[in-house]
Length: 263
Image (cartoon, rainbow, N blue to C red; front, side, top):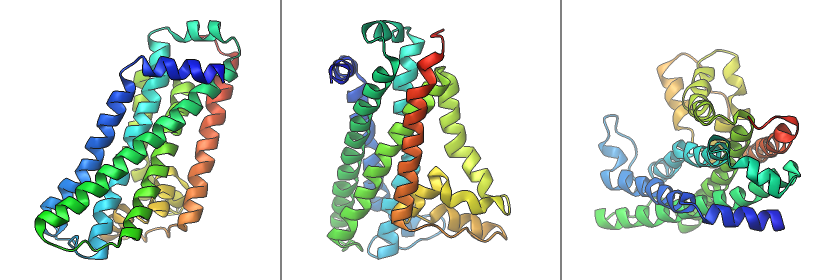
């Protein structure tokens, strides 16, 4: 508890919580902006927000911004190595596993806070956009809350994934490159390889799509290629896969620094 308290004080002494909240508000506001523009007005017309598929699509697009909490977690950990403050931290609490455990606990809460703020902002702006356009939202209140809650859970997991990647890579630019390269390039490439694309539902992006039922990417690739989209898992299975990745990332974050030099 002392380590967690110290990590919380250290975090609150920086601007990271403020930037995290601002990023969450901006990410959530994009949902309202898309709803205001109207998916039916895109170059390739899609269902409007007055339909269940259209409203679900606008909300689900928030899954494409989950790299943001992953980057926040990555930068938070690698920043200590970059500015050489991690040595002081380990001197204050010599047991590195305890230090990394405290960081994981604090950034899990920060990830949940990011997800809640982003989801609430997305919900409020979506309802506001529907009201301004004078249309009835194609999702019931219960459906909207469930979808936004799923995104909040996914945001928490991605924050933990970012912490794990940062603890493993330690070098900030390398860790950022891994996060962006994987979520924006590697997973999409794997979806285009016959046979290999069957693994997509078990990757972080596929598990997120399973949890949120956001199939826009897989459907788009299937339409543009001769490949058959891999069937997604159930939302429960998607959540279980994401939790498994979070546990793996947490284990890596705890074990990797134990026997490594700080330089």
